[in-house]
Image 1 (cartoon, rainbow, N blue to C red):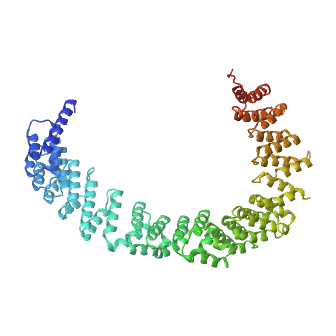
Image 2: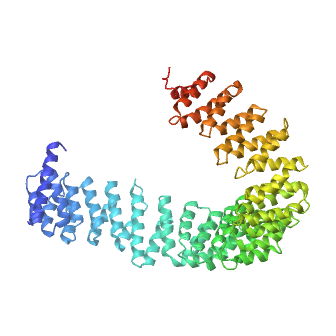
Image 3: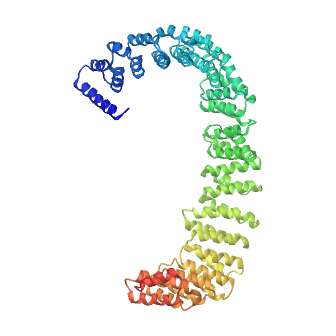
Length: 639
């Protein structure tokens, strides 16, 4: 369409809108356009409007256009949608006077009108030499339906011409659908059986099978059970979809009776269908699935038990969690942690008494995953078990629950004679309990009270507990441990003090470093002191301790660590200390960084002091980024 035609179409559209707005007789205006010398776009637009507002008065004008190649489509589109018998009569009249694509279009419109009067005209066209005409006739007869159409289509359903058999069988399926919708089940079944006897394609065969299964109540169970256990995959997939709707209880029951013969996907579909119903109804299918030979089905069963109120399944879940395939274990453990119902906890606790150790461990682990804080006594009981798997599972659940009331009993258990490896999980659990304790002072008293009951090697594990509590009372026994003859206990005390939440142990650590010059212990104590002194809020006290640390340090590593902390103190005294360190060539970069970090914070208040310090950095340091910062403080531009 050229620009001129587009312009005309727009003008016509505006005219039509104006006509509508003015309240004029729209239909008459549109008929006038059809009878005029207006161009194709204008007449097509009028046809479109007549589909909306046309009456039987419009039919003659539209009928005259049905044979015109460029207007036929628009005209029959208008007639196709008119609820007037005259419109259908005009289409039928034009059918005998047309050919080719125009005729195929008219056939299509007659099909959409679904008027029985068109059937006698369409039946002969099923044998038309033009395959397009024959296929269009078949499709339209399928839309119209009726006994006469079914008989004609059935007689030609295997016509050996390209495109025709498929169209005929598709039309028969539409006829069968109409019969089924109208309640004529026998008629629908008869058509489906005819098509399925010799289908021309797999999609048609599957559609016919599905229609038959839905329409024929007598055959439905046999059709579906045979499909589910058979090897015809297209039909089986259709049966699976049908099963998953859960709309045919008798079919589900029949399928369940032959469960063992079903493949995995059929069992899964059947399980899904049952799960769509209430839990009581689903349980038989779940129990079948629990014992399926197919792993995916068993996994689905364990997953399903999480949402079903069935405490009797607890033993089976415990077995699967302990002994099953990796996927089964994951699913069963998840369900054990989520299975609900008023009897779930009672069932778990009851089965604990008689379960095998591996199964017992899974149940104990589940109590922790469930967050069941009422089971502390049970977990503490099994935390003393001889079987390692049981003991570890109970301790892990106690660690997850972190119950304050478990602290004292756990300390008593951990104090028993055992190897370091055996004590380790006890200490992990104790650490979680103390860290979560709401009354840290009471927890501190409990840990200190147990200190003397622990063997020498076990006391090392108590020190981190005191460190996690961080109370003033907890600090004293850790400081006392610094003088213990057990060198390993002293090292553990130093490590704990270096992570203390306050700077309280800094002075004692510094004193220990003084008393052990040149030893590994001195290095550990000095590093711990420098680390913890950073928590001192009084900057003067902090700087004093750091200066002392610098004075007794023998290695560059500790001196650099101290300079890093000094660089965080924004005072002139700290700046002076950092400047003094510039004289040591081994500390040039760390000292320069400390000087600049402090100087940048003091630049506004002490400009001259800062400039002198920056000048000294320029004289000692060669690191480009630090040199650039020092030049900026001196007011120098980059070279």
